[in-house]
Length: 406
Image (cartoon, rainbow, N blue to C red; front, side, top):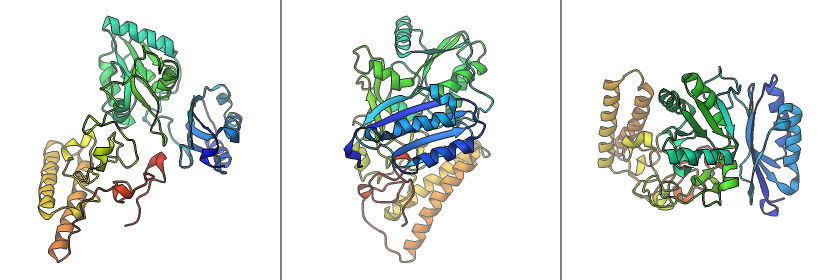
């Protein structure tokens, strides 16, 4: 059966429950997915299971998967599945992984136990509570996702963390905990799983917090109910961890769903659009992505100082004067890091040195008689291909995620 033969169902799920034999569950799910009829991502650890999978509706494999998972992990029999629809398979492969935590946060001492201060709210309850708080101008609403997801869409009035990973999100929560004494705090994420631990962590860091309200079912279920509503409080689109990039939409708003580089164009989400330094996914429009001015080398907000300075695949095509200028700037930034905080900037300085050493080697090659490639093209940071030739299968759920041989 090909992708075009039938509608495909995509389901998100998670369940916090004790799993004594993680290896057995991983093995059983890998065996189930071996025929390639159901693809996606499933994480399994001692504290539970979390995943997103996709299969053709006509194949019936999704219902079979649910039965297999429930047989391996009985608590999953009562677990809600959040469903959306696609016109084709949205994953490249099936990856079933054993991990230390469902949400990789380093908070192993936070087993999921609901307390009286942590309250789950159905989408309509959450909606009405937010409206009331907005009217009173007394709203503390935390987005528990990464910064690029917040650029794509968010709830009106939400605080979006400048975070690319769970460690940075933890620092965001630590800062919010200091301000949360005696307050009611609302939080949300894509499907609900990050809020489960974040709510408990926030309470732990601020015992004097009044109440933590979390959106049950996350953005996914809120948009199921309010996506087409005139009164919808979610702005922009909902990011998905699959080839679709986004699924449901809320209200159009100039604050979100705009290119983070030019702030004008509508984003085109692909696996090629990543920070040239750290490969964090970026939200860019087609014009910014295809421009040869940047050669496909853009930066995230955390590496803004390296914009137009750091390079990777484009080094052989840069002019001598440009390379010399970049080398000088990289060394200057390296020295600033060292003089400010030599201990905590070791890795940052190593990254800078690797870059300017490649530039110095290229200059030495040319001075020894080697010719410069004078093409003015953009490159995919992930694959090394010319950007126009990369099919966008070069990272994460988009494809195998490896760099091609050069």
